[in-house]
Image (cartoon, rainbow, N blue to C red; front, top):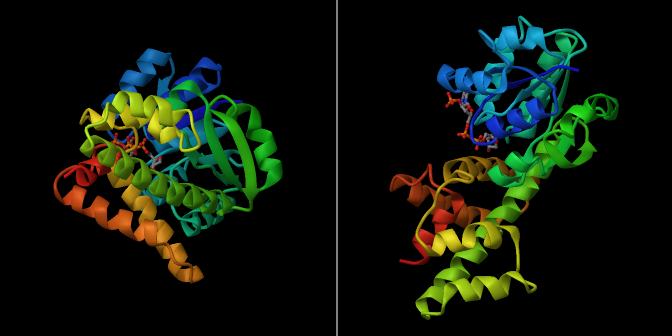
Length: 284
Ligand code: NA7
């Protein structure tokens, strides 16, 4: 089975590398061509002329682009080349409605679709240890499972198309709460002049230990906020969560607070920093 990858950003590029390591990658494409050319040369695969050419050359086409409209634009751009029987796997974080729209567009071309957002950060993408939450037909997932295993260590079928994105919204709300708790607590520790290296070391081993503290705790107290996961992208995800919550009549106060605080940081020019830049506000 041959795979192609569209969207070679912080998450897409390392996932493409893992597909190449598994001998599955045939072609890549990126909006800014320099990234695709460099990665294609590094991995010895084709840099497709356009998304349609990539779609025509593969059985499984991965997508990992920023937002809903970008996914829709890419699927439109691929459609002339889509092979009947092929599968598009979207690892972007977008709304469930977008996933369903894309699935319908692809069904008209005889192709299948899985919404397959991931969690685990750039570290997980590099190591191939991502958690992948999948929406779509179980039979389609089964067909492409050997390919997905090259990029993700935990792959769970959540339900029909859109359910993967629903699960990702759960993940993103939880990630916001964890970011709030960790940045607030570490700023509090810093204000007490505690030795923060030691605080992080011991707290990590107890009941409050978590991934975000382990991977971003030391860098945030040192005042560096390299992504990681861009704050502006998490803001975009939380807007999706808020919209769903409104439709469901569910209250999401942590999400609301985080949206407001991210918006402040974005207005100050920090939107491309890691989400741990929330620490900037907590430590003022
Ligand atoms: P990055 O590192 O910001 O990468 C975004 C990628 O999406 C990058 O390759 C972009 O191309 C591409 N992109 C963005 N908009 C478009 C459009 N309109 N058309 C084609 N390609 C586009 O983000 P991450 O890798 O961290 O995250 C990607 C997704 O996974 C996102 O949904 C997250 O929430 C989760 P560029 O290189 O800028 O030309």
